[in-house]
Length: 338
Image (cartoon, rainbow, N blue to C red; front, side, top):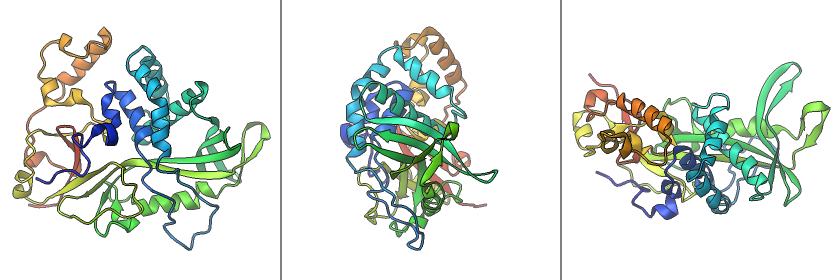
């Protein structure tokens, strides 16, 4: 079995700092901050596209934001303030969709961190609709006032999980699970749609000029398990990178040597939920669960877990999707066969 390039065993304090938190949404929030941008710097997917300058935060930017917020993360992880984070995320539109969940995590950090004086980014507007006449043509994620630089910044967010095929340096070779989404398509969309705006209309007929545009793309990438080609120069070296395996027949499946392989819950595309693992599910007493959880949460969680049918996976159970092996993300790609 091939070892993952970045795994929980590979110095988690450096690569996977979100693992130190026990509460799921705090883990997600830590991931949203500590995970670097996928791009080292902006690279246009098509040199023929003309647009205003687009920027990517420096590789150290998000690490600094995470480190500055660690005290607050610990507070959220160990106090009733966690309820505030949970209510905030669950009150947003479509909280069970990963893209909206990621946006909600960043939005919480922006508002909470600015209120506490942790960072200089004040949210002026978010989800700003763009119009051509009476028709909606797009939406801007965040318009921020940077109180350090005195500039108005537009941040466009995306959370992406792409499978790479060689050569890795080509954006079109990074493809989503549904095979319709590619990194190239996403970058072109960002460059030609939301980032074309210079002036935007806010409420009460107020116009505001955008001084700087930032693309923020985070997530996880998966490289071919049987290919040793190095990562492309544009890929941030600490971006979470894992492996995907083709499953063409029973021999491929048995060669995985992953006895604890299980399907990932949808939210585990961001961070691992240990309470879905086999050893946790085999616990028989509510008191064995996290003692910091309230009684109602304990009851609800045990009821949910009791319905999760953990059994060793068979070949017939495999579909193209995300799986976890001892907490490590892997994607299995099942080709068609008789």
